[in-house]
Length: 503
Image (cartoon, one colour):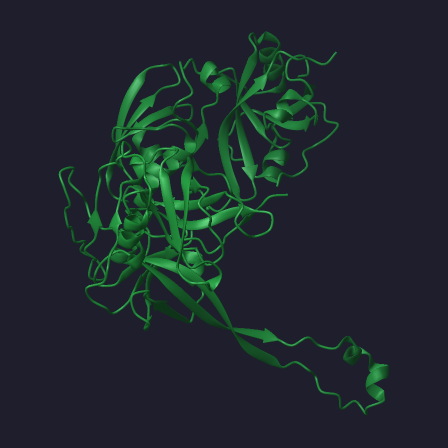
């Protein structure tokens, strides 16, 4: 089974420069530390040059900016207690004077990674997992044999980006590219220190863009490459055919733990954004709307009469949040933010996270009735985020298997509300049973959910639920559902197949 490994994969990020289309522009940030001066080029790579007989000039340009990172930490371990010492009969043979063996010992744990110099005065981008928990960090610059002590300016676990600073001047800083200009098939080089063998360059192409869903965090937007990446490459550089930094290597998919041709890098635009926030304030403050977004699947798009599946469906709006105060409603579809098109829920999460708390955002929205609307609001700051058995054999139970095959619902009462912690504001019917092989289960309807609406019609009791299901026409039934998962409660929309029925 494939296992995602966070291997030492290069991560190069921090740019605080903004580049004009006509050339290079140096830009300083005001912040907690003196901001680095970085070079940025917005122009896409020249894809018309061929044939290429050597990448030596590219390597000579980029390699001096890639460094080796050695981190270490003291690990305290408690020694294992011999189970015989717990036996009173055994202890009697030694007069009860046995040592307790409750001593602890310490050892030094070392790890290896890579990093990228992004400013002449010593700012370095790397992967968070390379330096996380380290007591001491040393940086070895390939152009010299000296090791310099590095200071951690900031770390962001959610994107696996960290910013270091060494005391040095006139360093060879890499030029940052615009990762939004990348295309699948572009040639890239990975530069790092795999297995500690020394600086190594591997070549491949961009295999895919916008990869996510690996469970690292909600902010995954990886560049996928087949350039060989191995332990020790983490935090290193992924550069384009002109030697400009396009990503920070961070992870691979591998059965063995070694390179298998599927590696991932954090796009430099995202890494640069994180770097700027870390340098300015020591942490990454992310914008916050206060909604639960869903992908607009073709089925849901059809239910909402939307011509395509582009956009993010608002499943729930949390109380006392910017979205709620601005009038965003459950069932709205967010199509754009500040003029940038929103493709899906993940795109919305990334876009909002890159906006500063307190900034103004203009949202292009399609209402549930099909009317377009523009909403302007001030973003908040993102905060740090079981179903129980329902009542059985009740007189207020009803089967809705005529349309929702395999689903049994019952009326909400005070006991059920208390048991499942359902707010009084939530109206509908509780799902008592969902057959495992049913269409509803396939659509993610679960026991303990509250069905609030069926095909846009509010539901107040089991009789209404049964009637609305029987009246449902078309290939799908649209449900608006309240759902609890642990301590989180939200509403969402589900599209249930209405074409297959069990007799």
